[in-house]
Image (tube, rainbow, N blue to C red; front, side):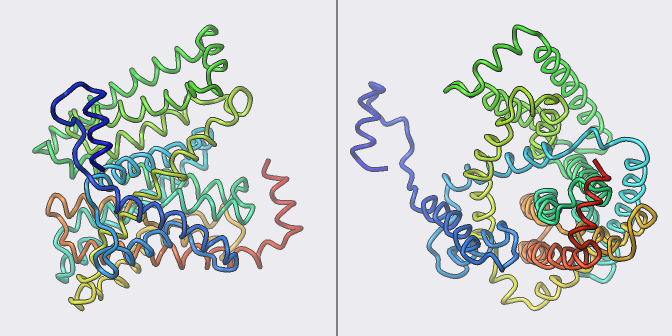
Length: 425
């Protein structure tokens, strides 16, 4: 911060010492430039079918200390990246469609999740037995997650998000994400000692969550409050966005105070908003657009670019054993999340859809980045193993969605796809 800015702030607050820390925003400027340029580059190359988050992380690696050294994860960048992670999980929770979590679809997805958990844990312990990892439980839990934020755009691009195929994949991915977040928070929280105490803390969190959700839903149904929200939602008050931010931070604080991982609070906050926000299309159609703008336009890209800046590329280049882990983790993702798609085969049109569903479920990146950061922080993963895991997640986000779309397009030509979309509504 410049001398002029510090002096002005000191004068305004009538204090002898500046209340703002002397920080630099140079790295943040580079991170934001990367977030902007990466999407411009993708926009100029429409034939390149890469998820934007992959390009953001790769560009972050380039400007980070491993290559050019233009940016580092200093205090401003770390704080905004942490907020970006919370907002990413909030938006992931917001993607859950509770109307679809019922009946036969839910039972099939739960069966697939059970198979996935078993295979994920088996893969983790096999890797531990051969000496490739040292914490099989963390690896197994991480393998269970699917990136909703990557899968849903792929389904929308193919016009499949409203079909039986798309809904089954979305429900399966939602359950995988939710289970992974809960298990990671339950088994790898920093503040609780034993499993029993963690279960008690989780129970306390659920009770508090139920009280908050019921209170918010009850307030929203009151005519006077509902009319007030409608009147203030598109003014400078942006009251619904402020309420969502309050709920997000409140649940993060509650998760932290109860000894659970803050990611659980962020994810559940989005799920709560999705559950109680039933009339979005009628009274506030722009609400989720605004949340997407705050998240994907500002905070979430900072998290992904910073993940690239912090990526330990030297750990892969200097240690061949870490490099070997990249394809191993990629295969483990296919086993843990791809193979359970066989459970869906009777509900799908054929072998192509089954394989495509498996590939989409095996697409995972944001949760791998999150779990790897937590694993390194608590000493459960080495930086080299974490880098290999993130690299495998990058490859899954690059390869699996593209292959799945190529499998689906021949099986669903445009007329058939349109007819199927009509029949699914």
